[in-house]
Image 1 (cartoon, rainbow, N blue to C red):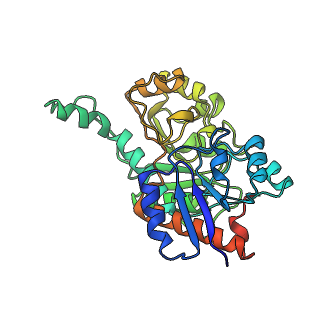
Image 2 (cartoon, helix red, strand yellow):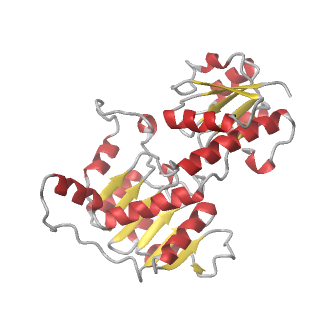
Image 3 (cartoon, rainbow, N blue to C red):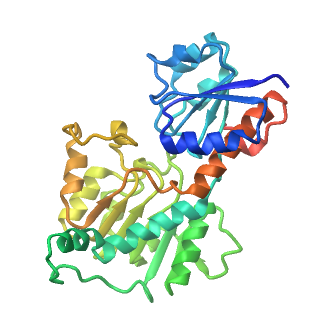
Length: 332
């Protein structure tokens, strides 16, 4: 097989380290890196390459796809599982193959989800700041035991399954909603979405962003939740109607909210914007609430996950040029 030349867009230091380590096992793969996203202004850099590699925050639209084909590129490698940023139907219609990493480390994401739940419950973000200012008072730091409470998990794929097991390990009763129940989770009670919203003390989202799931968390569903519920989203921002969430927070519906993803991520994801004024007032409003923690789409970010992403991405590239693609990795 001839050497495969891949250009990685928006490559951070941790991406480079993981891919350089993985590349040692792929002698027929050549990698180059740029630290900005694939866009109309940067797509020309892909000339002379066999494939490009992008992340979840890059919008792969019709114009970019057309330009890639013009540059004779037939393969786009997503170093992530999600692909709601891709015009999948158009890519298929013009013969552009898109391969993803469907599972890298479900434990990494689930562990981050429970970390957010614990942090907002026990006010770790507030306690950290108070103690740094030599304030050791406990006022405003009271949480509640997760043990004995009800965890509602929406989506029990690989990540949701890990979250179910973590919550079960905490001594929680676990209920879940999924169109395709996981029979291995014999300790989980599958219920309707309505019952899950009404019953859960902790709700964690682990489902994809689809037309059916768009704004799954909205004024109506928030209204039927328990007062004092904790809501966690490490899945996709589009699952939550941000305006309705803010209204619910103001109405004291939530004990705490932990978000690793949110609708207005846009330019924020993976970027240092310390000196910028954020364009979206909804993001600023979310950041103003004392019972809300937002992290920067980092749930995946563990050494194990990065290693798995790099290896699977390079395996996908080699498989494509050998006509031995793993069907589960195709975006369709």
